Amino acid sequence: MSIDWRERAGEIWTVPNLISLSRLPLVAGIAVTLHSPVRYVLLALIVLSDGVDGWVARKLDQTTELGAMLDPALDKLTALVVVAILFPRLDLPLAYLVLFFARDAFVVSLAPLVPLYGFDTSKVQARLPGKVVTNLQFLAMVAMLVPAVATTEALLWALGLASAVAITDYVVFVARELSDRAWVHDRRGVVAAAVGVFAAFALVVGFLLSEELADWLAALG
Image (cartoon, rainbow, N blue to C red; front, top):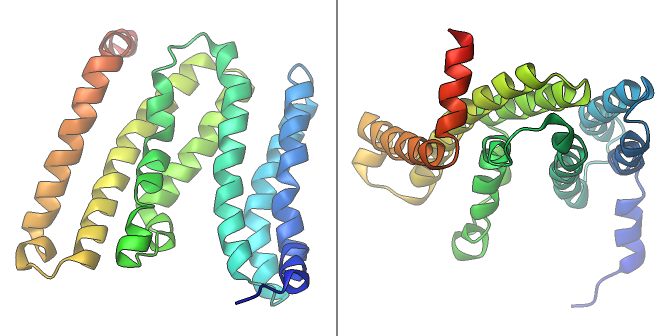
């Protein structure tokens, strides 16, 4: 079946998609204004564009399948580039990035389920625990931008715990979507998922960040 590229082009150049795409030059602007107060304005515009594009799409009746894929993809790309720009200034171990990107890495790992089971990963990303992680990521990026090392470190640990909760929720949700077994749909499924995810989280932290966690807890005390 042939593709009408002119029609597809019309889907790309919509107002909400242009708002989403505006994040790319804004991120580039942060890279060249790291020592200027302008960087705060640019990050605020990035956050604003993330909240406005979906609303504009619904208001103008310009919601498209392409736009639904473009927005979360640009969210992830924006976070990746902003963190790549800002994190090196903090003099923190690179292993902390595991805490920042754990949720995103798990969602990406769900991609093989799409062709195998026709699973819609957008259902996972829209869940409340995932939204909490996204908001904490934005706060962490603000702390990196300042830069506020202690605040960033605290937010990264909060992100790690929030990501573990979100991944537990995702595992339960996906398992219930794909299985009709009774135990998956009651508390046993939740407990099994929580034990597995938090055990994996503890192993990762113990292997990569045990000294940093001990130092951080000592500083709190």
